[in-house]
Amino acid sequence: MIKIFYGDDRVRAKQEIIKNLGNDYEVLDGNDIEKNNLPTIFLGASLFVDKRKILIHDFTANKQIFSELEKYLDTPHDIILFETKLDKRSTTYKALKDKLEFREFKLPENTDFRIVFDIYRTAKKDGKKAIKMLEKIKLNEDPIQFTGLLVSQAIKDYAAHQGITEKRILRELARTDLQMKTTKVEPWLLVESFLLRLA
Image (tube, rainbow, N blue to C red; front, side):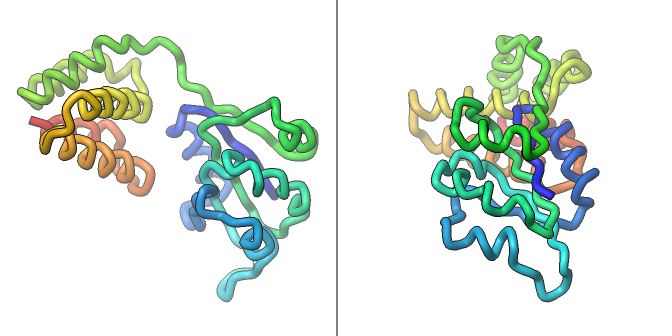
Protein backbone atom coordinates (compact mmCIF):
# COMPACT_ATOMS: atom_id res chain seq x y z
CA MET A 1 0.00 0.00 0.00
CA ILE A 2 1.28 3.44 -0.91
CA LYS A 3 -0.66 6.58 0.00
CA ILE A 4 0.33 10.18 -0.64
CA PHE A 5 -0.71 12.80 1.90
CA TYR A 6 0.02 16.46 1.27
CA GLY A 7 -0.73 19.91 2.62
CA ASP A 8 0.14 22.24 5.46
CA ASP A 9 -2.10 20.80 8.21
CA ARG A 10 0.52 18.57 9.80
CA VAL A 11 -1.61 17.88 12.88
CA ARG A 12 -4.48 16.26 10.98
CA ALA A 13 -2.05 14.54 8.63
CA LYS A 14 -0.13 13.06 11.57
CA GLN A 15 -3.37 11.75 13.09
CA GLU A 16 -4.19 10.03 9.80
CA ILE A 17 -0.65 8.67 9.51
CA ILE A 18 -0.95 7.09 12.97
CA LYS A 19 -4.37 5.70 12.04
CA ASN A 20 -2.80 4.02 8.98
CA LEU A 21 0.63 3.04 10.30
CA GLY A 22 0.18 2.90 14.07
CA ASN A 23 2.74 4.45 16.41
CA ASP A 24 5.70 2.31 15.37
CA TYR A 25 6.98 3.12 11.88
CA GLU A 26 10.18 4.01 10.07
CA VAL A 27 10.69 7.65 9.06
CA LEU A 28 12.76 8.59 6.01
CA ASP A 29 13.61 11.92 4.39
CA GLY A 30 13.01 11.93 0.64
CA ASN A 31 15.90 14.34 0.12
CA ASP A 32 18.32 11.67 1.39
CA ILE A 33 17.01 8.87 -0.84
CA GLU A 34 18.88 7.93 -3.99
CA LYS A 35 17.55 5.91 -6.91
CA ASN A 36 19.51 2.79 -5.91
CA ASN A 37 17.85 2.90 -2.43
CA LEU A 38 14.34 2.43 -3.84
CA PRO A 39 14.30 -1.40 -4.15
CA THR A 40 15.46 -1.74 -0.54
CA ILE A 41 12.85 0.73 0.73
CA PHE A 42 9.86 -0.48 -1.27
CA LEU A 43 10.62 -4.18 -1.65
CA GLY A 44 13.23 -5.07 0.99
CA ALA A 45 12.25 -7.04 4.08
CA SER A 46 13.23 -6.27 7.65
CA LEU A 47 14.88 -8.74 10.01
CA PHE A 48 11.99 -8.37 12.45
CA VAL A 49 8.86 -8.03 10.30
CA ASP A 50 7.77 -9.08 6.82
CA LYS A 51 5.56 -6.03 6.34
CA ARG A 52 7.28 -2.73 7.07
CA LYS A 53 5.53 0.53 7.94
CA ILE A 54 7.29 3.55 6.48
CA LEU A 55 6.67 7.31 6.41
CA ILE A 56 8.69 9.28 3.87
CA HIS A 57 8.79 13.09 4.04
CA ASP A 58 9.09 15.14 0.84
CA PHE A 59 9.57 12.22 -1.53
CA THR A 60 7.99 13.99 -4.53
CA ALA A 61 10.32 16.98 -4.21
CA ASN A 62 13.09 14.72 -5.52
CA LYS A 63 11.83 14.47 -9.11
CA GLN A 64 14.30 11.75 -10.11
CA ILE A 65 13.11 9.28 -7.48
CA PHE A 66 9.45 10.35 -7.71
CA SER A 67 9.48 9.39 -11.39
CA GLU A 68 10.46 5.83 -10.34
CA LEU A 69 7.53 5.36 -7.95
CA GLU A 70 5.28 3.65 -10.50
CA LYS A 71 7.68 0.66 -10.51
CA TYR A 72 6.95 0.01 -6.82
CA LEU A 73 3.14 0.19 -6.66
CA ASP A 74 2.98 -3.50 -5.74
CA THR A 75 5.09 -3.01 -2.60
CA PRO A 76 4.20 -5.45 0.20
CA HIS A 77 4.77 -2.67 2.76
CA ASP A 78 2.52 0.08 4.12
CA ILE A 79 4.10 3.33 2.95
CA ILE A 80 2.87 6.91 3.28
CA LEU A 81 4.55 9.77 1.46
CA PHE A 82 3.91 13.05 3.25
CA GLU A 83 4.48 16.12 1.12
CA THR A 84 4.38 19.74 2.18
CA LYS A 85 3.81 20.65 -1.48
CA LEU A 86 2.68 18.53 -4.39
CA ASP A 87 3.12 19.53 -8.02
CA LYS A 88 -0.06 18.34 -9.70
CA ARG A 89 1.28 19.44 -13.09
CA SER A 90 4.05 16.83 -13.07
CA THR A 91 3.94 13.89 -15.46
CA THR A 92 4.43 11.46 -12.57
CA TYR A 93 1.46 12.87 -10.62
CA LYS A 94 -0.76 12.58 -13.69
CA ALA A 95 0.34 8.96 -14.20
CA LEU A 96 -0.33 8.05 -10.55
CA LYS A 97 -3.44 10.05 -9.65
CA ASP A 98 -5.80 7.18 -10.53
CA LYS A 99 -3.54 4.45 -9.13
CA LEU A 100 -2.83 5.77 -5.62
CA GLU A 101 -4.77 7.45 -2.85
CA PHE A 102 -3.94 11.16 -2.61
CA ARG A 103 -5.28 13.10 0.40
CA GLU A 104 -4.93 16.80 1.06
CA PHE A 105 -4.71 18.21 4.58
CA LYS A 106 -5.21 21.94 4.34
CA LEU A 107 -5.21 24.48 7.14
CA PRO A 108 -8.01 27.05 7.34
CA GLU A 109 -6.98 30.40 5.89
CA ASN A 110 -8.17 32.71 8.64
CA THR A 111 -4.95 33.42 10.51
CA ASP A 112 -4.33 37.05 11.43
CA PHE A 113 -0.59 37.23 10.86
CA ARG A 114 -0.25 40.52 12.76
CA ILE A 115 -1.39 38.90 16.00
CA VAL A 116 1.14 36.08 15.60
CA PHE A 117 3.95 38.56 15.00
CA ASP A 118 2.77 40.70 17.97
CA ILE A 119 2.97 37.61 20.19
CA TYR A 120 6.46 36.86 18.86
CA ARG A 121 7.71 40.41 19.51
CA THR A 122 6.12 40.42 22.98
CA ALA A 123 7.70 37.06 23.86
CA LYS A 124 11.16 38.48 23.13
CA LYS A 125 10.60 40.79 26.13
CA ASP A 126 7.97 39.06 28.27
CA GLY A 127 7.11 35.37 27.75
CA LYS A 128 4.26 35.32 30.29
CA LYS A 129 2.52 38.25 28.63
CA ALA A 130 2.93 36.55 25.22
CA ILE A 131 1.26 33.39 26.60
CA LYS A 132 -1.70 35.47 27.81
CA MET A 133 -2.01 36.91 24.29
CA LEU A 134 -1.80 33.40 22.86
CA GLU A 135 -4.65 32.18 25.11
CA LYS A 136 -7.01 34.58 23.32
CA ILE A 137 -6.37 33.12 19.88
CA LYS A 138 -5.24 29.52 20.25
CA LEU A 139 -8.72 27.96 20.07
CA ASN A 140 -8.99 29.28 16.51
CA GLU A 141 -5.42 28.60 15.44
CA ASP A 142 -3.32 25.56 14.61
CA PRO A 143 -0.10 25.18 16.64
CA ILE A 144 1.89 23.85 13.67
CA GLN A 145 0.89 26.75 11.43
CA PHE A 146 1.50 29.19 14.29
CA THR A 147 5.02 27.78 14.73
CA GLY A 148 5.60 28.08 11.00
CA LEU A 149 4.73 31.77 11.17
CA LEU A 150 7.11 32.20 14.12
CA VAL A 151 9.84 30.56 12.03
CA SER A 152 9.21 32.92 9.11
CA GLN A 153 9.49 35.94 11.41
CA ALA A 154 12.63 34.58 13.08
CA ILE A 155 14.24 34.03 9.67
CA LYS A 156 13.43 37.64 8.70
CA ASP A 157 15.00 38.84 11.95
CA TYR A 158 18.10 36.73 11.29
CA ALA A 159 18.39 38.04 7.72
CA ALA A 160 18.29 41.62 9.09
CA HIS A 161 20.77 40.98 11.92
CA GLN A 162 22.76 37.77 12.31
CA GLY A 163 23.43 38.10 16.01
CA ILE A 164 23.69 35.62 18.88
CA THR A 165 20.07 36.19 19.94
CA GLU A 166 18.71 35.58 16.44
CA LYS A 167 20.72 32.36 16.12
CA ARG A 168 19.52 31.17 19.54
CA ILE A 169 15.88 31.84 18.60
CA LEU A 170 16.25 29.84 15.37
CA ARG A 171 17.82 26.93 17.29
CA GLU A 172 14.99 27.00 19.85
CA LEU A 173 12.38 27.04 17.07
CA ALA A 174 14.07 24.13 15.31
CA ARG A 175 14.01 22.21 18.60
CA THR A 176 10.32 23.03 19.14
CA ASP A 177 9.45 21.99 15.56
CA LEU A 178 11.31 18.68 15.97
CA GLN A 179 9.53 17.98 19.27
CA MET A 180 6.17 18.60 17.58
CA LYS A 181 7.02 15.97 14.98
CA THR A 182 8.56 13.37 17.26
CA THR A 183 6.88 13.56 20.67
CA LYS A 184 3.35 13.12 21.93
CA VAL A 185 3.48 16.31 24.02
CA GLU A 186 0.50 18.59 23.34
CA PRO A 187 1.73 21.04 20.64
CA TRP A 188 0.47 24.21 22.35
CA LEU A 189 2.50 23.30 25.45
CA LEU A 190 5.61 23.18 23.28
CA VAL A 191 4.75 26.59 21.78
CA GLU A 192 4.21 28.08 25.24
CA SER A 193 7.50 26.61 26.45
CA PHE A 194 9.26 28.23 23.48
CA LEU A 195 7.65 31.61 24.17
CA LEU A 196 8.85 31.46 27.78
CA ARG A 197 12.41 30.66 26.67
CA LEU A 198 12.46 33.42 24.10
CA ALA A 199 12.97 36.35 26.48
